[in-house]
Image 1: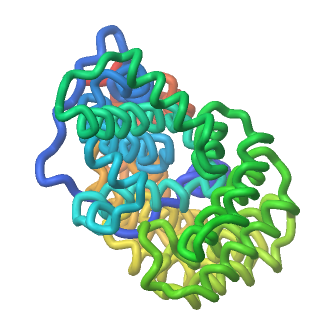
Image 2: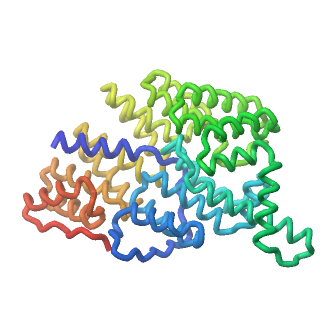
Length: 412
């Protein structure tokens, strides 16, 4: 059982990143019909969403929601839903990208931005792959609005809109050109233009631009330069007026967390710990830092600190299933099976379509010699797991060993 628990913990470590307050929709979005697809596979919903983002952003947003239900560790699902919801109301998107405070501070946009915040705690250096669609919609909506007003509401041809956009981009600020270069994956141009925009920016925008540049540098593998830009962004944020910060993801705790993960990538474990500590100094409720500190302690063999940090994370995380799953897997590895079962059960309650907690719970029930409980957990795992899930064969074999028939693959 020890080797199986170690594998469960490896999977859980990948899960340990989501973050702050989980978004709960008032109504469950409609589940898209996926022809000839495994409806237990989050990747099928991600693919459907990406294919429909430009023309049917509402349907794409629903598909991203379902992808997250199946895999609460997916930063792609959270960021994709963020992009789709912004695109679903083009007029709001213009106000958002223009930084209009009444738009950005509205309750609905704060909820949308929390998705991107959470995605960044999972993958601080992610490239926003849908930026091209978002940027083009912003430009076209903005152009149509400006031209409509200048012409007294008369209809505007596509040719006129395209000409207006070309003029704006040709004569645009370094900031606008940087956004365009980023959206087109012209990373060297984007980095150069972000630097130009930073030198021209008002104080309110400087920390955001530096953080954007740092993330892109990290994404392209230039870790030392990324660290320097993160440090500049944090210094700018500390030196400014926090009342000027507009977006949810303008957070010193989030940036310190990114610094910690960058140090981990570079093998600087002590520096990573210090950065996570600074993140918690900025925001005691920032539980992703507790998760990382717990996993670093576990890797160092300090199990008492690991459990303490993960317990703090679970208390602060509230309805975040991935934290409870990670904590449960660690407790299971340490032989604290009753406590592990409680955390894994909590994860399965918070994310009813999430398969992984059920496999871990099956391993725990096996360790307790609870045959009925193990059978039920493995069956529940197979009912939720994608056909390609790496633990599916192990669960099927264990069920046969326990005298039960495995659940067929294929989703619902």
